[in-house]
Amino acid sequence: MLVVLGVVLVGAAVFGLLYTAFATLTSVLLFGWLLLIGGAAGLAHAVLARNANFFWLGASVAALNIAAGAVMIVRPDAAAEGLTLFAALLFLSAGTFRLVGGLAVRGPQFGWTLLLGVLDVIIGLLALAQWPSDSLYTLGLLFSLSLLFDGLGLVSIGVGARRVIGMLGEARRETEPEEPVADGAQVTGETPVNVEKPSGP
Image (cartoon, rainbow, N blue to C red; front, side, top):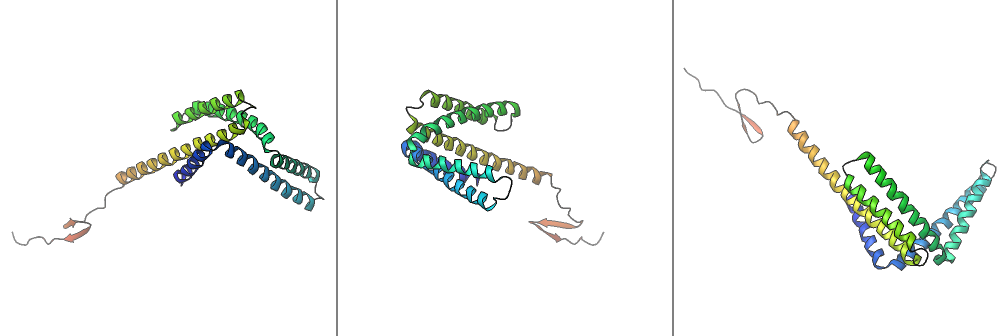
């Protein structure tokens, strides 16, 4: 299932790389609608629980989400600039954490983790260097590359996990004791056949 999900993410990433402007606007509008719907749901919940102590906090957060979602839907180009800056900083922080975590843990995917960390840092720096002039294309490119890296990572993890499971199965079969065969029995295939001993001297 991890391999299948990884292949789906890689396919979406390839489509986004071919149509970066479309990927940018789609990401902005999708995020805006999510904020708008989530803010409306949060505001309704705050109104229903208006006697609780968190009413004003919940209502304020919901109002901010609604306002941000409305701005992103009405002005997706301006929202793309802000999201591009946020995505660039996110790539820098994620790459730094991957590098530090990979060097500290040194797990089975050590080389792959370091490679992803380096690529994340490079992408974040390039996005900051081109901001805000190329925000309409940078955001779609960043998210498409993120999908590509995550998809390849899932494929690698799935293949590695399948290999480990196969190795464990082979080791288990090798360590299992063989079934004892009774005296005077001859094994043919899997069914023991009794053989009578010859009589006489």
